[in-house]
Length: 366
Image: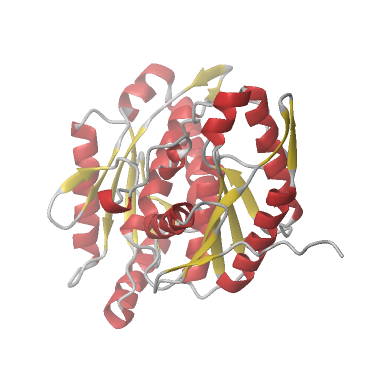
């Protein structure tokens, strides 16, 4: 009943205010065979476990409900399809990686998913039918995967890099793996954890949650990307230890300027991200300028002698129409604008374009 009520409310919001919501259906793969092999008690424990994973991954941005025997549904009120896909895929992957214990045994299951967003003229049955079609396509494709219905056909959920026009695409460099939202760990020469720095999956979970809060009328939300200039060259000339050192120094400097509520993550070999809830663009740009200046003054103690390092920074504030992929594309473009201007720059993107802040000249000592 709660699910039915929420779907009706979402349909009414779309009709009256044009607010799009998304429905996700989840089906435990080959559940009858699982019950036959392990017993109904184990099956019940698996259903409880799947529900726990769904609620932990999506409970803050969607309503999770039991939909059928081995089926669940999640309705994401006020969230369009593009903002839900990554979150849904991470939840599917998490279920496949979770072990469920029953009678001393460690058991694993997978799920198939189907998503659809509300469209003009929809009734509840039509929305559910499209999501169910996408779910059925996932089963036909071999299960343990997800599809979404775009209004015309069912398409596989593939979390790919955001495409940038060739004219705006910089030379390939270390660190671009942050462009996709994946549970996979980026290959890295540097395995020592950085203090108070989270990984990509945790960061994207938080970004999706914060975007959802902001969309519902929450406080401002700003996203910052920090790239270490010339990182690949530094490692090539001075070795992996130098790369390790600059990463730790950069992480400490970024942390020193953060508030308790901010979220710092490493998204690539040379790229950090900072999520700043409650901060406007101008405030975040000022912080980025102070950070850029602090890095410029820093000297790395290398075997060949002290060496400075610089950073380039892109900053954006969430604005109307932003979903997960769009805000990532905007902040990446802001970062690339800073790099194109010669690096050691801060660039803020305010929807009207990028503004590059020149480094402030250092004053001579009196």
